[in-house]
Amino acid sequence: MLTRPVLTRNRPEARRLAADAGLALALAGAAWLLYGSVLGLWWTHDDFHHFRFLLTHRPGWYLFDAEGFRDFPAGVFTPLLFLSLDADRRLFGLDPYLFYLHQLLAFALCPAVLYGVLRLWLRRLWAAAGAWVFLTGPVAASLAPLLMVRHYAESILLAAMALGTWAAALRRWPRRRAWGLAALSAALYFAASLAKEIAVPLAALLPLLPEPAGGRPVSLRERLRLALPHAAALGLYLGLRYGVLGTLLGGYGFTVAPSGLPALALAMPGKIAAELMAGRFSWAAAALCAALAMGILALVLRDRRAAALTGLGLLLAVLPVLPVSTRMEPRYAVPAWIALCAAFAAGGSRLGRRTGAVVVLVACAAGLWVNRQDWSHRFARVERMSAENRALLDMKAGDVLRQPLTLAASLKELRWMKENVFHRPTGERWFQDDLYLCAHPEPLGRVWGYDPGERRVVDLTSRIPVLRERHCSSIRSGAPLSASFQVSGDDLFWELGPYQDGTYWFILGHGAEVFEMPRSAGFDAPEVPVLPLRIKYQAPEGWSTYSPELLIEIRDGSSLRWSRPRRSRDMIRTN
Image 1 (cartoon, rainbow, N blue to C red):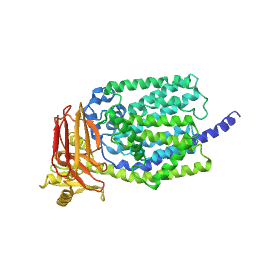
Image 2 (image 1 turned 60 degrees about the vertical axis):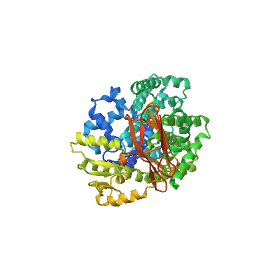
Image 3 (image 1 turned 180 degrees about the vertical axis):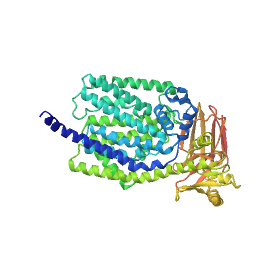
Image 4 (image 1 turned 120 degrees about the vertical axis):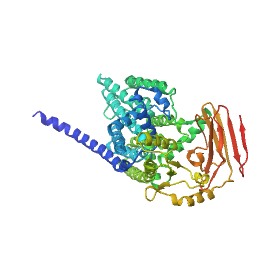
């Protein structure tokens, strides 16, 4: 007699939990279906840098050795990324399939956990819509195939759990158990920050978030008291980061002078928008933007507090990215994308039933369409990298790989692994720009290259004379081109011209190495006395031109100016 009322009273709650768990699992399954093709990839991008550091440093160095992070080329403080990759290495050896299985699992949990967090504040439909739009966004998709950015997914997971635990603490305030939950939330927040610094601004947002559904009002003063563990975690993280790197901002190579920050800030919204929409216009992208705008406007136009919180969230998402946004990467826009998806879901829940249903349908359908268009291009690129890197491992001495997409620095790390880990002979070469063919008219040996139609690396030896003639004859050697370089301290700054549109490249080794570069930027100067490089410009119409090899002295205060108005001539060096 006593059990029946209890079961009756709990049945609706059980059904609610079962429905939420089902939707969370469905979102994780959708991630698996959308991005499961990553399981067929080999190593790409910076994987070889990470592996070499894990193989050549003391076990667990990333947990106690500050010098290791200073030696790492990227200048990052991401101990949990190295922990995650090292755990895979020790459990699975160097089997890429199991690494990507871990990667996909971590990524697939992101929309599921994001749904769970949104559900604390929103109705089921809108929590699911916000998580789905996040999942299908191009910037979220950019995380799936890259092991080197796994820490973004793991940081999102840990930060979402910290947010959910914070909501539980708010519900229980002022009972003593609230402090335990707040401490657990702070620990999760600290771990999320150690995974990736995108989680750091969360500490400023937590006290300002509205009460979760069913929670009692909690004053700002009480919230600030409850957030003291997060303040301590933030202080500890910043102290560790400064102690390890000697700076709070870190570095990714590009350097920005203080005078250049305003222009960089003005360019940021456009760069983020381009990444959010995959850099190309389509009717599906326009429909997605319209649906997102309706949801966000419904939030910010009806609630000043919500508008201020949305603005603050976007500002905190963008500011940490500003110093590294000289060359924008899709992952840099992930925090802004999460903020926009949450604002869309929160605002959409205030729309009428019919209007809201239409907005959800448009956003979800358009998001899926954009995702499939973007993924076909994005995955084709990383699939090519995977095939080229795998082929390079199998190449024999004297073989040459044409135009690999992986940066030359990573290919050199692959060569090290080929010799020292896989115990195979080296002696292969590569070139990333066909200028190399013009500079080497003699037979190169057996030349290989990627065939997009066959989706594999094939023998191009017989086609090299035709490819050489086609490229060398297409160069506009008299086209105007200019470059100026200035070394200031440990940084190299440049200005390239005269074209505003098109793409500029730095060429090393007569085409052996290429680096796409902004027209105006700065970079950590290499530790060499003289840097020999060429400038390549490629016009939107397809033609290209090159400078002669320029010798840049890497010495504080040195500078070089070169220009070709109509014919290759004047070089002016000032010291």
